Image (cartoon, rainbow, N blue to C red; front, side):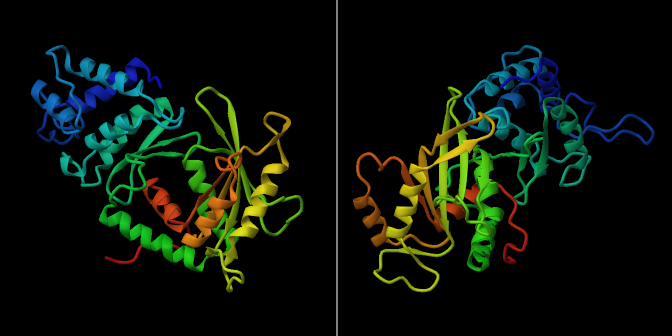
Length: 331
């Protein structure tokens, strides 16, 4: 990812605090500064706080910082709508509410100055519910996250959001699970051409509730089909109300892999490369064992499954807003 040199140097000015002095300006004079001034040693400390080993070499401060930002942007990332995680962490650290200067804790003036710079590259910054500052791509509206590992320890705010989403999953319909949770989640994870078959019209669904495409770094495409069940997947001979038998879902996944889909962007029919089995409830241990035994060597890499805990964790660490009707419980 590349930003223009002017943009990087303006970001360097914000990090160095080159805009004015730390004292509030007299009424009628120029706007007061909203970023702390950082000398050479404090610039080094800024990056060390992020566990980065950059040490200022005594050259012009804002140009040196621009060079560091250019190197961070050159790191691996998920596409033009997702800057590298290290760059996003720098922006979040710069906008720490505890560093507010001549501004409110939500730093509206600092945020305005930052967005004046980022908008030139098609991004804007905003504060999430957890108090962290995130970047959003203006074209696709995707949000760049700071830590995408769904298995990391969750913060208090994230635990509350997880509980709110869990309550929503308990009450939602299968269509709501698809439209309000899965479609935004897979878009955020970098999938494209996400198309929901829906449950109002089952014609030609062939076991697919959703199909989508993922672009590899080599620009090759992989196609995914998703079979969604709202409730629990089990291996019982007779499933209870709201549950589904894993053998039935397995057959639907095989049907999905055997039938073509039409990609209007490439104007050709293609087979699904991989199938996801997604459950809004638990996939029991017995169901997992049955599925593992049923998949032969050819299909083992083609059929994957995601259960309730996976949905909750992935959704929360992706910093997506909760669906309409879902709310985190009060503290």
